[in-house]
Amino acid sequence: MWPWEEEGVSALPRLRHWLLAALLILGAMLAVPIFAALT
Image 1 (cartoon, one colour):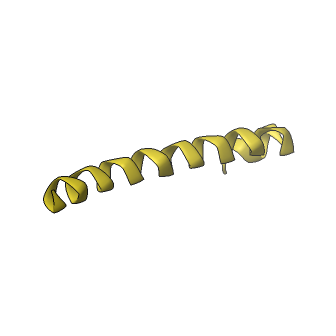
Image 2 (image 1 turned 90 degrees about the horizontal axis):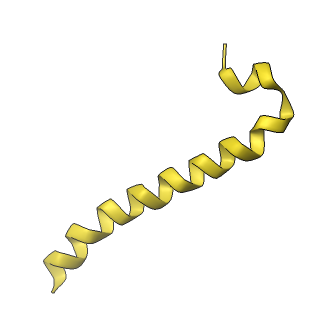
C-alpha cells in the first residue's frame, strides 16, 4: 500500500529526512508573512 513499506526499513530514514525538509519549508512559509506583519 505504502511505497516505503515495499522497500523495507532502509527507506525509513529517507522518509524522515523528507518529512523534516517539508516541515522546514512549511515553517518558513508560515514565518515569513508573520514576520512581515510584525515589522
